[in-house]
Amino acid sequence: MDFLHTDIFLIILFILNIVLLISSIISNIRIKNIHQKDKIFMEKLGDGKNIKEDLDKYMNRVAVSEEEIRKLSVYCQNLNERTEKCIQRIGIVRYNAYKDTGSDLSFAVCLLDEKNNGVVFNGIYSRDMSNIYAKPIENGTSKYKITPEEQEAINRAMKEK
Figure 1: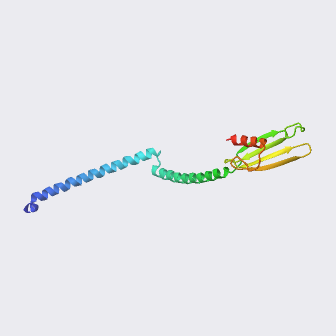
Figure 2: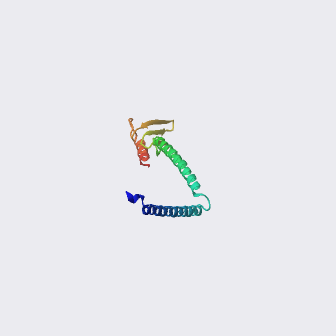
Figure 3: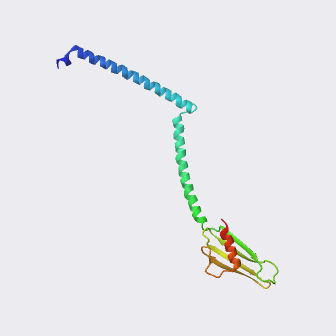
């Protein structure tokens, strides 16, 4: 305990404090130099402007763009769901229903959506009259009797992709 009260101990503490003070000053000078070099680098990188402001603006633009992309994705998904039910496949067959009419004036037209649901129209032409019939199509078939011409129109429509 007597050693703690001696002059040698106080001198050692004084020298240790001086060394720590010098070390602290040197560290502060190095940090200041690094900060100055970083500032110069950032100004060169930003063509004389503050690069931090540019980065903040860029990050805001990215956030806005991400929101717009999300909205567009939802919009496209809605469009895809709606277009599944639109007419996407068409099959047409012209034929001569009666041999005495002389031309292929009768027709069968099939209109289908993506899931092969839709309608087939059959227009039968004769010299005295014309009739058009419609039959619903579900999954490529109808619960009504289908003529060969209607079936050909259905097949042609289903082959379209």
